[in-house]
Amino acid sequence: MNGFADHRLDESAFGEKKTFTEGLRTFDAFPKTKPTYSLPSRRGGQITTLLLLTCLVLTFSELRRWWQGHQTHNFSVEKGVSHDLQINLDIVVAMRCPDLHINVQDASGDRILASDLLKRDPTDWEQWVDAKGVHRLHSEGGLEVEEEQHVHDVLAQGKRGRKFGKTPRVRGEGKACRVYGSLEGNKVQGDFHITARGHGYMEFGEHLDHSAFNFSHLITELSFGPFYPSLQNPLDHTLDTTPYHFFKFQYYLSVVPTIYTRSLFSPSPNSPPGTDTNTVVTNQYAVTSQSHMIGESMIPGIFFKFDIEPILLTVSEERAGFLALLVRLVNVVSGVLVGGGWCFRLGAWVGEVWGRRRRGAGEGVLHGRMEKGGEGDDGDDG
Image (cartoon, rainbow, N blue to C red; front, side, top):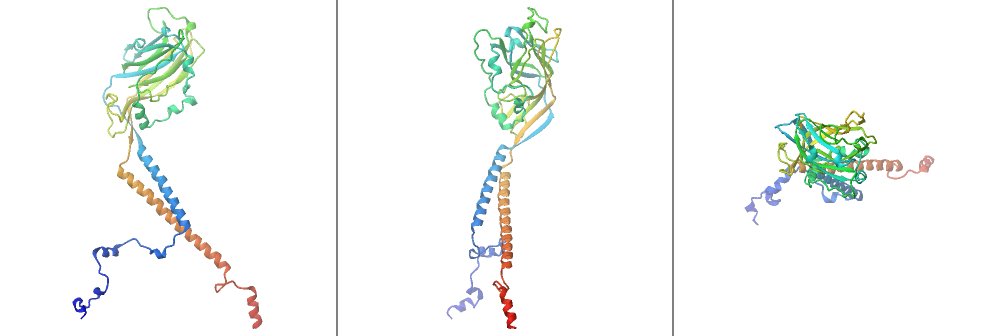
């Protein structure tokens, strides 16, 4: 009757019919609080804003660190055989160009007349020594040059022009000489030296008068391998002067083949430069100097002695995958929110306990303050 017979008086007919999605509520592991039981507060809003700002700052820091990547240094024995070594030089000597003799001699006995391969321009000494960034070797002004360069900076600098700058115009006959250019030599131990005309080698011509000796010099560029003028080297923009005519400047260089790369696979050091925009094949070197005054029976000048190390340094910049970045961001944000929530709850609990103690110290037995005279009145009634 009235349709109950159709339902057979089943209890489920009088309740809410459960569907599959409604049945999933049974497996909910995250407790919920009804909105009527939660009360927003001003302090909670302030803490939430602070946590959001903290998450934003840490997220930006993680993105910046991921974008820059991290560098790894790998030393290995140099593979392959490389016979040639390019030397790039840009130096100003406080002597006239016709009075200088430049030569390269390596351990294999080959001798290169660098005077015929390098350019020599007359100039004024004062135009160079007062330039910005000029410093003496191992002085405070050169500390920034010895700092390690990042791979992305090296790659950016390697894309710039590869030409030597122009020599400033000089009025009259220049009393100094700028020697610059690149020359090819053997990739073995060798000496590169600048001496006076008629001194140091058996050659035809008049000997230069000793009063014209002045080997004060400014090194603007000294590098090995492909010419990258933007890359910094230990001897770049170094100045050294002397008041003596017979003075010997000696530099000892230890050259290490170096590869800067962003790729996972290191290219061969013999590969042509510029074939990969994410790779720079060059050479680094460490330098020590030993300069002193000598007697007239010895040869004054500027001497560079370089030695090629049999190792290869690969400086690679690696960047984690995008999935790893997402995992780090989730960890950072969740850690801040969870930690901030626990700190907020702990602070609220401490404040509540402290408030109860303060209220309990000033209240009576039955929700009121006890009067001092009340006990006395009861005593009188007794």
